[in-house]
Length: 99
Image 1 (cartoon, rainbow, N blue to C red):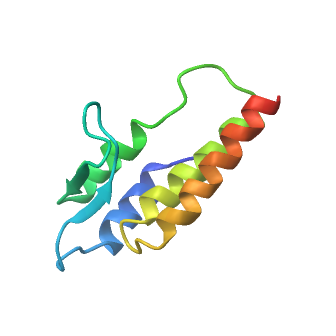
Image 2: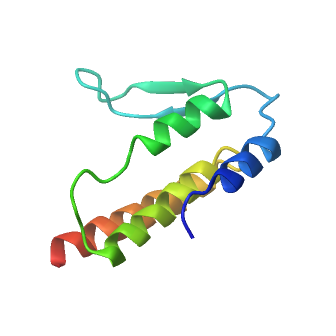
Image 3: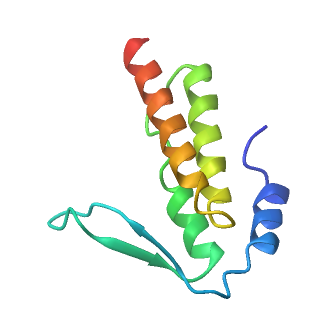
């Protein structure tokens, strides 16, 4: 199951970040210790969706990477899921290297 509009809308509705913005460490050119802040789900969604694969990869790798992006999107609701998302992304990339 891909990242459907219904999934994205459900996460947006469930994730009211009234406690403050989502702030994550994200290396940037010239600043490896940068912190990136997202005030709205649409900012977070655009950032995560931009993390797509750039080349044709085997379907199994693409499916695993898509799972990682779903977990990243769900981290808007529960930040603890970011670790699981990163692990799934690394697993997908390792599979791509082995294949």
